[in-house]
Image (cartoon, rainbow, N blue to C red; front, side, top):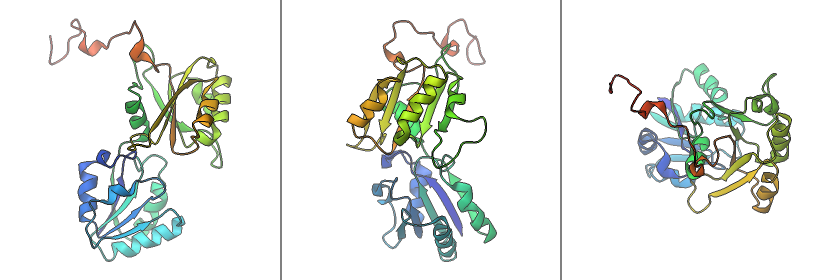
Length: 254
């Protein structure tokens, strides 16, 4: 008996990994995050699979259900949005399973950060612009550890992928300004990245993005990306990667 924590990806069911899809097809029971995971991701489940939506359950109820199902089925799947290791309550759910002696495995998934960059045809890193990406969120009901306020992290002026913060977009803007980001700095917001017929891409600046999101009625399931790379597709001058430079040698090219 094993409980598999499977990343369902950002929304499009075709973006789940082959391994994740195959586990769904073998599962005796599936607990899925219905508020975030498209039910179409369950289309591979066997007809007799026991399926439960966790959106109204407490952490304790979820843990108890997973333990009970693992005692009946060889394969139990906890289907989570994006990747289980990012904002997924993974450890809180794993600990009770460890206590019960139940084996667990984690199957990674495509994060909404990557799906958002893909939807907008943006690169999170660029030579001589930024080579660092920070995954973070703005402080809300969950406090941030010391040294991890958005303003402090934004001070690096690298790419910021800001999760779970669209309802606090005004705080995001304030933090960016506090960190020295110019009002004209580009900001990208992608709502429901990769969701068929539901995806929205909003481009703005530090000064305009909050109003644009309000006008588009974006209040949930959105990735905020602040990066000096945004819009590079249309730059007339671009530093090229050394990896493909004819003067750059490596073990495959001399």
